[in-house]
Length: 253
Image 1: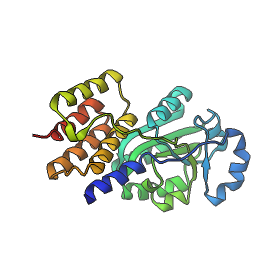
Image 2: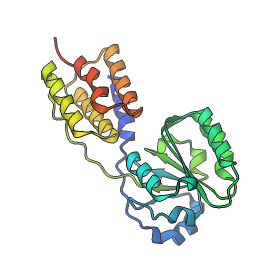
Image 3: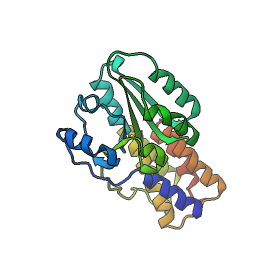
């Protein structure tokens, strides 16, 4: 069960229970407090001019990447922002980002990085450019939890907390009496509801919570299916397709 508890911890890290309350009008106070490298609670939607007026690269803790990416895409002109949408930030991504940052520009440009995990070596590769970005370049690093980045990066950037407090309801599926028709009825329902990737991760967390609560033992293949379901959702496979093999493996007999 140790692997299950570790998986539960990892998933809960990705749905941090944090509030967001401050507004963009507190720019002056944020600048005054910048040197303390504190975490500031930010509004759910930062004013379009806030980041470019603030002129500081930052880390943003969020558990709703899709809304954040849509907001940035709809707010900034295409030439003013470059969005990296990654499952994991790797070394080749870091090198590409560094090259992008060194492209000369005469006006402010945002480089927004969305990743569910950040490779340790890739983070180290970005340290220098994060500390001393080229002229007019502003970095926005999106993370789902504080433990996704090394402390050295936190010491260089201001942190905005935009995580929403979420209450995960128990899954509406009895895993102890699961049948094949029940599984297909459930996944068909998910397909019709067009479940988002964030909701998919929450459902996977609910399944894990139920497995632990009912002391359902998973063998190595079961653990592998769980891991594959998590990776599939992170890689933006349809949630109902990602969950189907895992749920079918939980059917008794």
